[in-house]
Image 1: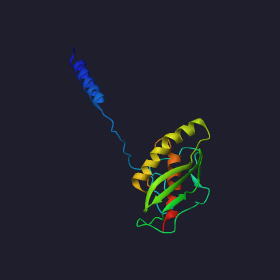
Image 2: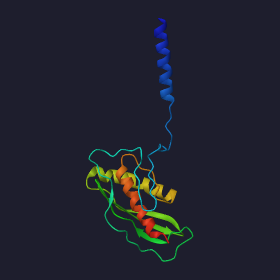
Image 3: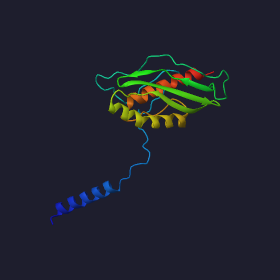
Image 4: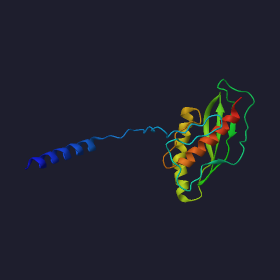
Amino acid sequence: MPRRGAAALLLTTAALALLLSFKTPAEVTPTAGTQIAVADGASSTPAATATPTGATTPEATAAPGTTAAPVAAAGGLVDGTIDGTAVATRWGTVQVQVTISGGAITDVTALQLPSGDHHSADISSRVEPVLRSSALAVQSAEIDVVSGATYTSIAYAQSLQAALDAARA
């Protein structure tokens, strides 16, 4: 075998071995610009994420409702159940309800998620548990944007932030 052929075979074999030994992480961590930080009622879209052509960003459409108890816990949040703002996206409306006990977020329930067609309903059913567990883990609206459900993720965070703002003492 000529020398060039042997080198090409060796490099191809090495590349194939590296490719086959590659292991994906169990939990994918977002890269810079994929996390949404929503604080003090203002939201920000990820800096590195471009808005698709013809797309609109979520906008608030209704005021939050509240059934919170009047006494604030040590965490600065009033115990109770608070509805977040309904946020309209190009795929449908997103609204959450947060339950606070002892100043901590104990539950987040999606009151409305995009479901106007089968595809939107499927995405919503897959993304809701991810967003909920993220919100419960970080105890805030600073949740990661879920790939493939960017608008729903941003609107979920906005609605959650509005509910948390309403729960502040």
